[in-house]
Length: 147
Image 1: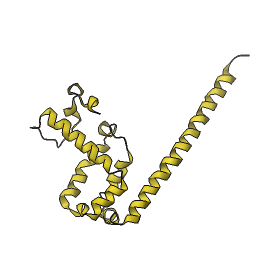
Image 2 (image 1 turned 180 degrees about the vertical axis):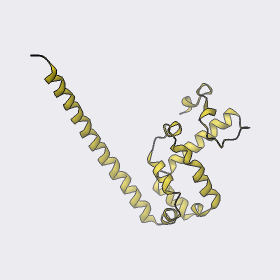
Image 3 (image 1 turned 90 degrees about the vertical axis):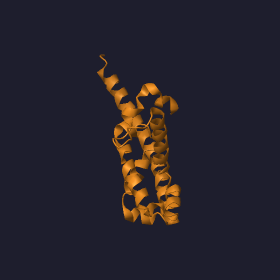
Image 4 (image 1 turned 45 degrees about the vertical axis):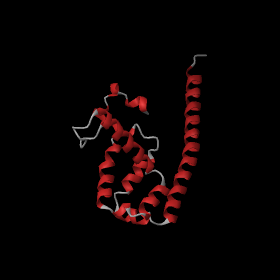
């Protein structure tokens, strides 16, 4: 990731509108990396359960920080995410009811199970679609050849 954030990459242009103008480029890079890491941690339901059990999800400052992090949904930032499901969970964290439910261990387990099922079936379905597309293309090439 560090290579993508070199000084020639213009990291300052990727920082959110609310970024501090008095930050050095090095401070901007560090903040970008820290916020990227934190947003991706939100994809872990067990971490969300940890935050909820310790009361972080009730603190107004933390809730405001979660709102601030919504800028990661913009394509110019989202392209750096390895775990895009973190954006869905970030959206859900904007709702008080969801934040309250995360205190429950079974809630975190349910989310974890749903993610696992999605990954299993998404990969299988994607491979089926790719194979079907390749077969259609091969058939089209075969029928378009003059006899």
